[in-house]
Each structure stands twice: as C-alpha cells, then as structure tokens.
Amino acid sequence: MAAIGDVARLAGVSKATASRALSGRGSVAVETRRRVEAAAASIGFIASPDAASLVTGRTKNVGVIIPFVNRWFFGEVLEGIERALLTAGYDLTLYNLADRGPERERVFDFFLARKRVDAVIAVGVDLVETELAGLEGRGKPVVSLGGSAPRSPRLAIDDAGAAVLATEHLLHLGHTRIAHLAGREADRSVESVQGRRLRGFRSAMADAGLDPIAGATVRETEMTLPGGYAAALQLLGHPAHRPSALFAASDEVALGAMLAAERLGIAVPGDLSIVGIDGHEYAEMFGLTTVEQYPGEQGRVAVELVMRLLGETGAAEGALDSSTPLPMRLVVRSSTTTAAR
Image 1 (cartoon, rainbow, N blue to C red):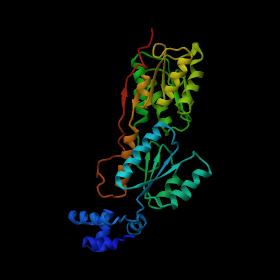
Image 2 (cartoon, helix red, strand yellow):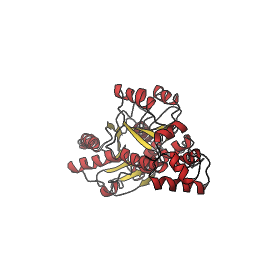
Image 3 (tube, rainbow, N blue to C red):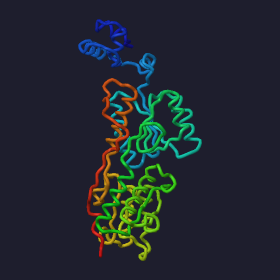
Image 4 (cartoon, rainbow, N blue to C red):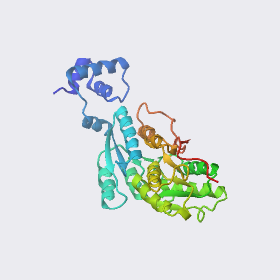
C-alpha cells in the first residue's frame, strides 16, 4: 500500500510538504503542489481522513439536523448543502430530528456532542439553550437555516415579510374576507416559521383596517399537501362563512387547498383566490401564486457560512451577513384574481 513517504520521495519533497500539499493546508508553492498531486495519482495514494484529522484537529465532516427528509423544501435544502459540502471537500452526516423526547436528546447528548463533526447546520429546527450550549462547549459552530438558535447565526427569508407580501397581494385585489391556513402551533410558537407567517398575516390585515383576529379565519394544520387539503375541506365546507381568498403558510398547503376547492366545486380563482409561500417545483404547473424562495441556494449559503466559521481557506470573507434576510419574490400566476363584487 502506498504511503505519504512514497509520494514525498517520488515528488522530491519532505513528508511534511507532501502532507501540506495534499491536505490543502499550509503554504506550498503551486508547482510543488501539482508535482505532489501528480506523484500521489501515479501510485494511487489517497490521503487518510483519519490521519489528516490527527494533524489538523478537523474531521472534514459537517452534521446536518433536519426534521423531515421527505418534504420538498427540506429535500431541496439538503441537496444544496450536499453539493456545497462536496465542493468544499467535506462529508455530511444526516440526523432526522424528532420534535422532543429521548431520540432528540440522544442526537445532541451523544451523536452530535461526541461524534466527530466539525460544525452543525440545523435546518428548520428550533434549538433550545441547553442543546446549543452543549455544541458550543465542544467548539462546534452552529448555523441555523430557517429555524432558531440562541446566539447562533440564523439564515432565513423574512417570514413575516413574506406573509405580509402575500396578504397584501390579496388585499390589493379587493379581497377583505381572507382566511389563513397556518402551520401547526403557529399561535403558540411565535418565533417559529409558521408563527412568523401568522404574525405577518395579522399585521397586513390590521394595516388594512381589518380586525386581524375576529375578522379573519385562521386554521392550523400540518404544512403538507394532505394537511392543506383536510383543513381547506373544513374551512370551505360552509358557504355562509366561506372566504373569498386564502393565504396558505406553504405551497404544499396551498396545493392541498386547491384540490379541496376542486372537490367542493369552488372555482379557483373565480370563487376563491389562493396564494402560498415557497416556490414549490409544482407551483407553476398548478398556476399557483406564491412568494418564491430558493431552498437549494439557501443550503449552499449555509455551507459557505459554516466554512467561514471554520476558517477554511478560500471561504468568502465578509460575503455573508446572517442578519440580512435571504432573497424572495412574489410570483403572480392564475390562482389569484380580483374579488367578485
């Protein structure tokens, strides 16, 4: 089996220089690096991650905690993270995290705390102080994407602002009877994604002179297509209280609501305008008006921030500011129209 000493002899350099050249760390002339890489390739030498870890203290591995792997948004984020980590030369260890309970505790108390990862990206997860303190105490930086974590950098769109944008679109079309299909626990978890979106909806209604509590129907549901379908069936099943427009907390909820309206014989947008948030891959197919965000790009940005926190060579300096909301835009399609007289 080829060893680093064989590479060094073939390239005519010391073992320390060969190690620096192959690890990408330390100062090595470009020509020397190329000579070492060519020597390693010629004899089939592959640097051992474990050996490099002993020298650098790094595992070249990032832990990603995520609540769902089978939902569109999270899948897109995960794909963006994975591509960016591979480009940076890092591995990914994935943890599908439960809301609460012993499984979640094991992830933080054992796997993330003791297993060798250099940093953690939390996607759509609200971390508590004790969970964060355990990671910080072991020198593992944390980046929160979409969720929340005390003191840690947080990357997200302006969820309340997105809700305002969606609701104001309906208001500008002349709708006043607007319902909101909110995410589960939105009224209690005010700093969660669903809580921020509910707050934005109520703020836009209040600014329009409409009672944001008594004057608007809010129903909480799972932020999934089946959740939106079931909630919309209940909401739209009573003609006397039926809204003329509906703002859904996610595109999957909105798509479920469109299917429920079709089942009930309610024309979209003639009888009911519907708007969502996310920019789902099926939104254009269904003609859904939505506030579009870019989850794949968000995953890449999260990795870029992690690389900066780890002090990786080549990471963009000053290119990111976690206090700046990530991009979003309103995309108007055929699911919304002016309110009927």
